[in-house]
Length: 116
Image (cartoon, rainbow, N blue to C red; front, side, top):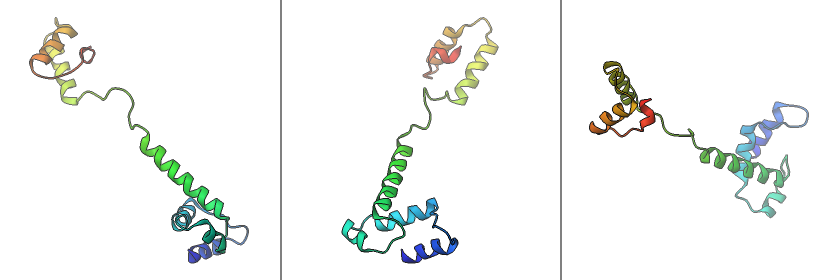
């Protein structure tokens, strides 16, 4: 941990600017220590700052994991879409209800609105 702090200090001459990777590393190394031990260490930032960094990393990780990847109804499988288009092209007098019924006979579960 001290080595990493020294590398941060060597990168600039003014006030040290921590990159997100620096914050992640320091928060990961130090958040396990009790607060009284953290206060005894010679750190470039306050112990409260390190704990705040750790909380924000956990919050962002939880937020990223809990966001659904895709909203709404899942897409129709490509083979079903191709089949619906083929049935509609070959049987121009059929409506979407008839095409939906033919899909049901074939054992393909699809909504009637898929055949529109």
